[in-house]
Image (cartoon, rainbow, N blue to C red; front, side, top):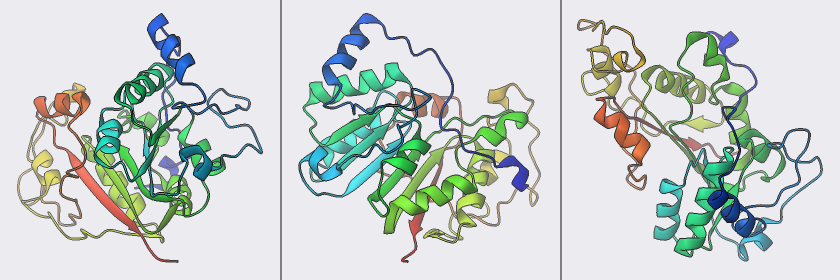
Length: 277
């Protein structure tokens, strides 16, 4: 895949950030508590230069930190936080209504080990997280930017892999999932080529057992974006590389993932481990 497709990573889509009254009340009640109150820079998703967070003081303890990028309304991170009270979680969600809904969920469920950052993920990694601070980084179902001319906007590209490598602790884990086969291949290629990561499932789920092979044989992967499916014959369809992880059991099936499954799409899981320094 050509390097020209990988430019400055963007972790979000520009949408209306207007809050309906119930979300505004949730936002106001959570700001400075479940919802981080971060002074912003030139953009409201940027972090003011020089601002920092004492994470030990923020959570009131020292504990492993899991960061999820693109938490949406928080189905996955809330379930994980409830199941792992000994772990701290940081949910990054740039869409204000989603962040407000997540903050309200955290408060309603009494989850003291979750904070929400309504910020650009790149800004959080660059300015708020110290080196080696993260035990796990989760990127589940990021915007696929499926049109060819937009693929340069995808989050997972070499420059972002470098940022992730800085904050993930040695032997820490980066977990990813997508229902877009070509984005899965890009993730596998980009992070697999990064010096700081190794794929513990290298070579696994290849050939006829690969979800990529199943897509190439003619599932709904192309049909779901309005394109006619042209299945490849064997052996052209065989994914000889593999490297796909088994489904991450701690990831709850969100409404978004269920819609993909109902449409007949394949789910691709990837896991990478940060190499010791």
